Amino acid sequence: MNTQNETLVRNFYADVWNQGHIDAAGKYYAEDYVDHNPAVPGQPAGLVGAKVVFSAFLTAFPDLTFTVDQVVSDGDKIAARYTAKGKNTGSFVGMPPTGKSMVVTGIELYRIAGGKVVERWGSFDQFGLMAQLGTIPAPAAS
Image (cartoon, rainbow, N blue to C red):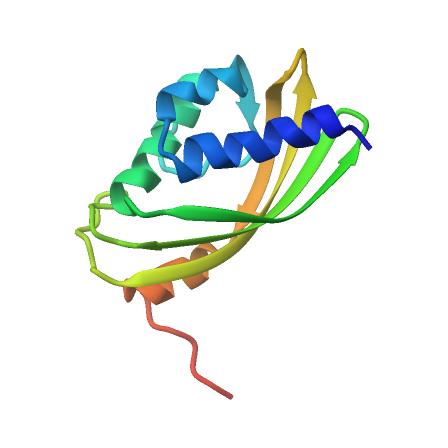
């Protein structure tokens, strides 16, 4: 268990995502961090790319909040499972706002070095997000 790295990740969610302090991302992410699963089309590399992602989601969902459901650490790796909620009142990757609310879950794996995120792997329920926004058909109930 690495409580310092766990605190870094929890503070990142609280500060950048929940408070919308995109410019604070440099406190948490290294300039040259590597994103192994880019979240938006054409995402630039490094900290600049992270800020593009934060901006895209916070523009589309200005009330976006993340609840960190669980954090697990193993050496320099931190896994965070989260639930994100928000209402789509801004454009999102080229799509007009839908006015619909969403709740999605996801998981991130971070590698920390020198007190900052240097690598990220992540996955969230993109299909569920798009279905809740009505941009794709929701799956039929069985």
